[in-house]
Image (cartoon, rainbow, N blue to C red):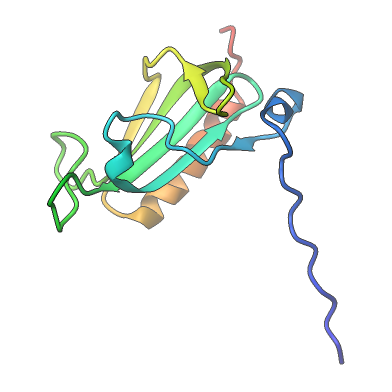
Amino acid sequence: MKHPTPTPPQPIKAPQDATEGAWYYGGYPGHFIGSHNCRYSLNTILPNGFQVSTVGDYHPSNCKEPVTLSIIADSLFETMVFRCEGMDDDLNAINDLHALETQHYADSRDAERGHHAMCVKWAAKDPHA
C-alpha cells in the first residue's frame, strides 16, 4: 500500500503577511548585539505588532563551551518580546529595543517550547492596551 505524500506547510511569502494574520518566521536573530556568536535563534513577528526573539548557545570568541546570556545561572538561552514597528529592506524587524518580557532557559528544548508559548501568549494581547 502506497502512502500519500504529506503536503508541506505553506511558507509565508513576505513579511507583510504578518500584518495579514499570519506569523512571520524571520531568519535572523531578533535581539542581542552578540547574536552573531549564537548558534541558536528563533525570531517570530506576530500580526498584532509584537516580535518574539530567542537566542542561545552563545560562544564568544575562542570559547569552546557556551556562555550564559545573563547573570542568572544556566541561562544559556533567552527569549525576549518587543514591540515591532515594521521591517527594513533586509527583513530585519524594527523595534524599540525595550523588552516587554524576558525568559531564560538552560537547554534548547525548553527554549523552543518557551518561544512558542511566548508567541501564543503575546499573539493574544491587544497591542494598544
